[in-house]
Length: 276
Image (cartoon, rainbow, N blue to C red; front, side, top):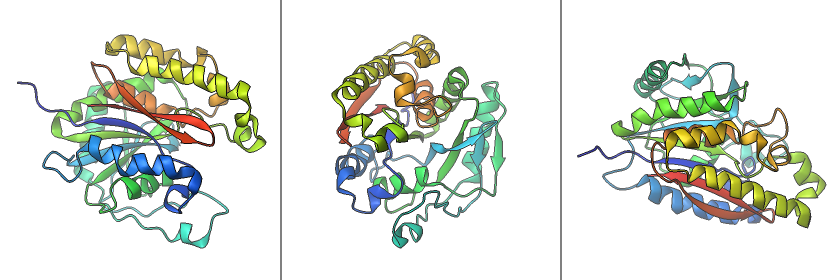
């Protein structure tokens, strides 16, 4: 009998600290983070993960880098919010042990990772996790995305991490795969019917890749994601960091069809994906 595998979830994490500041526009995202994600992770049950490896859009490095301290400060890496946004706390432990397992899994996958004892957790970690798991009792190890933005390498990172799932270590990607184009959002371009239709076609392409059952074929599709219609409108050149956590998750998901859900945000459908 095959061992039960911990899940893989690629979430839409919202804008800055807004999901935990009562932002009405974030209501749908918050509801899913409070309900869907804990159910997928089986939080509060005997099957909940013993640790979470969280791949964050807000940490870009030259090589895969792993937070390895026992405790982490929080990085309030956003600007112009109320004072309460800079007093937030999330007291989940880190795990040097799991960080070493991540480094070992990457090495076995032909990738050289490194551990970092100094870096704190950015808002891609503590904001969604505050909503998902407010008791903060599960250890978290943060993993960076790469400045190279190379999709094949990110998919390979996910394939390497997939081995940890049999040890009841869940993989969570924290980004905004459906759209992260601040210029388009602030200019109002995303409210036009043309942009909304383009976003729908783009999301259909992403979802079709996620739901490809064969992992090798899925990898080939994600390697070519920049050729998909709308790719540069949703994630401008040099700004793929919010899509890359999904690519890692797509690799970690292994064989089988990924599942999805959508949340309305700024008048668009924001899709999140998972593998169980």
